[in-house]
Image (cartoon, rainbow, N blue to C red; front, side, top):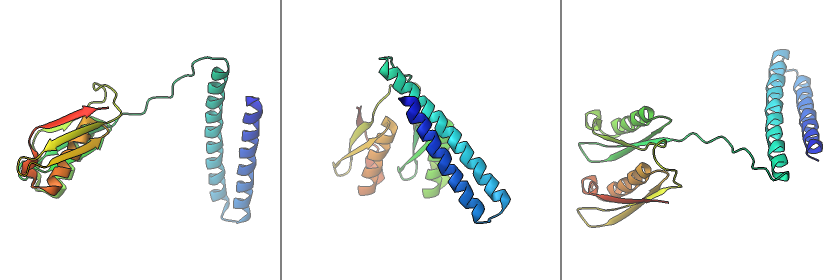
Amino acid sequence: MMSLIRNSLVLGLSAACFLFANSAGAQERGQERSLERIRILETRVNQLEGIISQINQRVSNLEYNQRPEPYPPVAAEVACMVTDTGYSKVFLGKGRIKLEAEAAAREACGKAVHSSYCQGVVKCSDPRQDRPIAGAICMLTDTGYAKTFKGEGKSLIEAEYNTRKQCGDQVHPSYCVGSIRCETF
């Protein structure tokens, strides 16, 4: 059954590629451009065949009550937050590694205030050491007007940033440097 579906998908994709290649050639846009399109389409067909093969294997495993192979893990994102030393504003940077996220946070800070204020301590998430979470929520009461602010994020750092940013947008950021409470879910 699955091989029939796979074969019909491959035939359908091949026919679509053939028709697309013929229409590209009929428009006389040049032989080199047509050949490049054909190479791109062949690559895409090969990728689709690989995906269909993976799906076929997973379905076969499910049919025989075998546990399917897990999909490869999604690369975790690192978030870093820096508070400028002049105005107490917060800035967030994200990246594939800590250094990239820290640089993005300091760059965002330098675009908003003088870069000499952006040399403070940086707080970063570490997906390799943090336990897997679906998200986080933080709550902060500002020290000037006693207003309460709540923020959410994918990590504790992102949730803290969103909370402090929301606070700093509504009252002076210097009132938003107090203690913060966060929980994950």
